[in-house]
Length: 267
Ligand SMILES: [Cu+2]
Image (cartoon, rainbow, N blue to C red):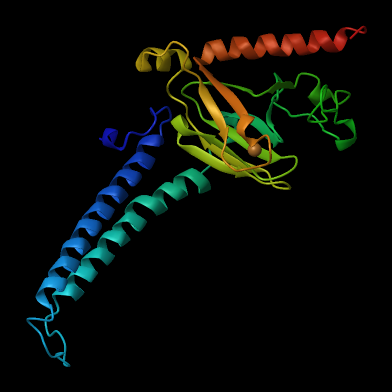
């Protein structure tokens, strides 16, 4: 219905609602723009000097414009109460239970996205600021903590399963960044000192999107949507949406690599 807006392809379950809000707002603003433009032209002609050499002090008697104003107010109330507020409530207030969702920690820094999964135990292990090493351990994961042993971290690569809720817990190590994935219709600022949850259900795998767009190289991209410093332009992350079973395989493989690396004393 909203193809005429030319928005990026849609890849989450809630995205359609965002698009319809954007679509209705555009239609309404177009009606207002044309309506007020025509009215302005009419007023210029109707009250031109040659027709009204002397000002008419009592002014207009008709209430037509009040009726129009009332109509505009009504449509704006509909946009607010029928579209925006329910959407906000669903997106921000009703976060699904963590038991039914995949929880991923995404920590932004100048100029990269650090991604962390809990591994098989479903627990995120401790982190310590003293353990942070820009190359080896950008999140300061404390591998001596039992819950941290199977935690998986990646740089700029976010793998997600399709058709299940994903909760991204967004943080920042330095300045304000913004996690934006246009196809997901998701955009949220990452603010130092805060952990902000965002959730969505990706419903188009990367492979499906490649067929759909006819672009064999298509990748979902996390674009940092806040000017966060000199390297802002290169702060890109990539999202790969896999069918649930392939995602599980990927994560199992990553956990195995992590456990093997930890067991290797020569590393
Ligand atoms: Cu950034």
